[in-house]
Image (cartoon, rainbow, N blue to C red):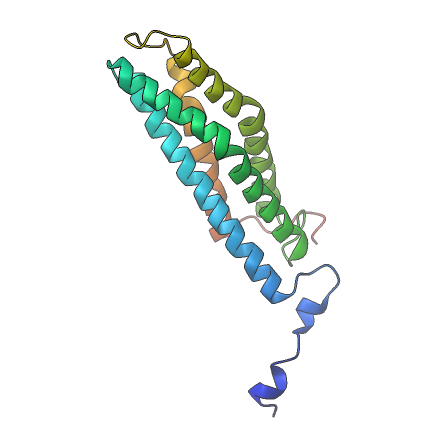
Length: 181
């Protein structure tokens, strides 16, 4: 029988396989992934709250503040947090036993996240900035005209997809892909 001190320096056989991250690295990347993914979800809830307030208010000053806030989120937070969540997830998929294409839930989560990251980068962020710019070009006592659907649709779609990704991560449904068998 081996003692705990004798096994402390050994690496488990599964962690020694080529391409797998050592446990301390995997845990660090996992923590970073969870933090950024949860942060991204939180930012999306914030976007929804600010967007809904801007859409529903009759107060131009409040609406302008909400749209400026969305512009700040677009400038500072959205792209870094979206890409950090995406890249840490990709590292986990490639550096752990789950693999990127071995399990249907991982592949589905990767595809969904890829779509949302690209939409965030090339559609949502420019739209939020254009709303902020519309405020700068409007009178302080007038509401900025807003498209009702575009104000909330991105947040609803993003929140739905993130929720699906969380469920996939916890439930791990559907088994292996043909490449993982």
